Image: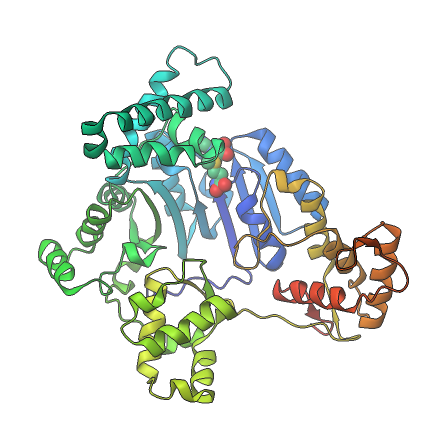
Length: 484
Ligand SMILES: C[S@@+](CC[C@H](N)C(=O)[O-])C[C@H]1O[C@@H](n2cnc3c(N)ncnc32)[C@H](O)[C@@H]1O
């Protein structure tokens, strides 16, 4: 989308700085056995736990190392992708500098790095709550972080309630009240990290880009296209931003941050020598869009308010919310098949998809959504998927979340799925699967939910359950042709 040609994932090396237990890398290591993943973190206990999880999953293309970012040298090796998530604005300046130095010294010439950070102006207003919470714990620093978090949340709640009780203050402080109240809805781990950690130094996008230039790196754009593109905006806003920023793309994005009070950015960067290759026109070649796979981003369904063309809105609503994944070709085929879309032109299909990408309704991937359905004696599930799912069920999920091939969260796996996966490690038949599933249900005292919770016995028909489990496993991309 940005006009660059980063290395192919197959055979690539990926480094995560501050990887913690490896949650961002492990699910990808399962899906991409030909890609090498390395994570480093200061915390020896997290790295040890992460390596135990990796060992129990039998993964050999990922390793985690206890290491300070400050100790990475060019000898640590070259990487095609470097991930730095939830670190940059939470570490002192010398570590920030070092992160950028690693991106310069350890990134291959066409590689891409990703750095996320808290940003202004969005964080200006949140800092009030952070200051209150830090002050509330000024003399209780020896308490565990969980207790400090509880105290911090409670005091912010007290102030929110107090402000709401004063009529004149209530109306003048709506956004402060919103900020305070939203903290109560956040998990303790998140609140501790954002509001109580000693280091939390948000920065403006333009300051971040200045630092990149000092390290001979180039800013590409945000992973959220809405924070980089302006072509989707109403004309008067585009005119205003263009007038203010002229040809300066950083000023343009800075204007977006002022406008939307942005608090968090996920920036992509590359080596400075690629600067002139970056496509900032917001015009994307059809040939490129044809190669991509689009995945639902679970954003609320209100496309009809956004698309002027109602047919385009209906078409995309169907593919985003019912199908969940698609390509341009699948849209074109659908339009050709259904008369209700006969007025929709190809150009309208392309521009609607682009708008859905920019507004974050779909995410884009070069890796196709390649899945296979179960076939008697022709498909199997590689053992690594079974070991991965089993380890998660047996407790690894306390430390890392389950992810699919696009690193989206997976929630619907249970013991039955893992058992069925273990039965599919070599090619088999549906009949054999039905038989073994029934035996498993009987042996483990499962009840029939559709029949007064009666214990499952030999009479039970397993085929529906077996099919639905196979569908889940197929959708996850676990089922593969035995000939691959
Ligand atoms: C908020 S966590 C983010 C973990 C992970 N990147 C994620 O997205 O889940 C920040 C991590 O950075 C690590 N960290 C902080 N400073 C570091 C340093 N100088 N060198 C290595 N790791 C560091 C911490 O130990 C912690 O595990």
